[in-house]
Length: 269
Length: 262
Image (cartoon, rainbow over all chains, first blue to last red; front, side):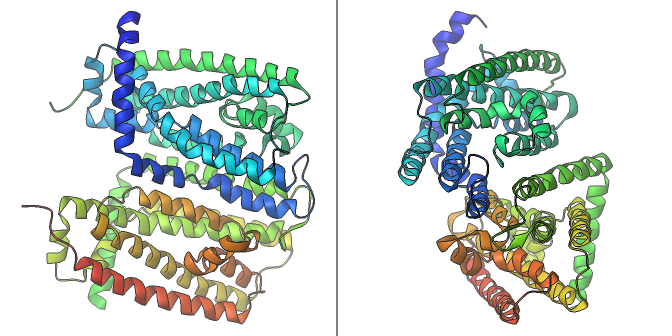
């Protein structure tokens, strides 16, 4: 499992995974269409905005926020936890263990390879969003856009690593799908996916600031919609916190995986 | 008729016994349902913090809709989803043959093969939401309102089931629909708010094409005692239409079935 061997294998791995993503394109489209939650939330908040703005959010800001949420969710999505659960149960994880690269890297590569198709779906949505709100509700400072990219990558890594950690729990407890279910519900509530974090009461915000969920989706969305245009230092501090969490999650994932994999025994042949 | 009632009893018993094997799961499911109920209540809590009414609904009134949403979601995931996911699998593998050979109606058999009793928790969650909402309103629902809402619950179940049968009938034509079921569940998420928050095309679609308004908003309005009689008539007519139409489509679709094996 040398670093050089892994780097050399990457282009091929990516190509194979991309071909797979293209082969299952119809299925992926259904998955994208099934991401209706931001639009459902947008309907509620639009009705709210009709009675006057809520915080800094008027109608246009809500449209921008929730369409950005849709786009960021597409770009940071990961399903590795379900995949690991499935492969542990079916025993097909064994074939992954035989390959000369780290299995977690394999899942990550499959995730990356699906990106171009997801970008292809999300970019039109982003353009529609821009046309609808006329650029008023997106970030204007170049600094915010500069920070957006690492924030997006950080959000994706956090989601992926959380998937690894919960997925690896399947090695200890047969199936960790239900753990993922609880994680997902908490993520929905506390990440800014359903409700912009800024709208929570101050007490709740203080807690959310220290939970990982907000850094998975809410933070990149806030950067994109101009929440930090005047306060870039706050954004830098949040970005630093996000990446500290990424490192902590990476360490935890590596630890849980190396512990759990010893317990794995494949069935069948 | 009695034979079908007995069959239903047997199928329910089998599902319950199956679920009883995993008692630990039941406790975990309880926890999960409560957390997911929070995803429906928290947004309402936040948006109503600053104002008293949105699109003609106050906070406790909107909670009543959430209660109905929780109840119907339980019905969908507990009684409708598990069986019909099964059908998709059977059509693909060709094992639907065994169902068709049995001396009972195939639609009845496939609709009752599997239940998930733990989803009954949603009924408890919904009741808690109702009790809380009506305590905030200050008075309980009237007897007439309650009766109308129970009637609407029946029509809502029929609508939901009919829509599902239509989705599943598609499997005989296109085979690969297993993640269409997720799409359906995702669309059902829109039923968690009062239908008046939707505008324009969405409002028309959610009333007439995918009648989500008839499933959660109308029963809630009935419970609050402000449902217009014409809406009740629309629900009854809609349910009747969906029942007849979905049955007709199912009968046609099953004629298309060609066994996949041998």
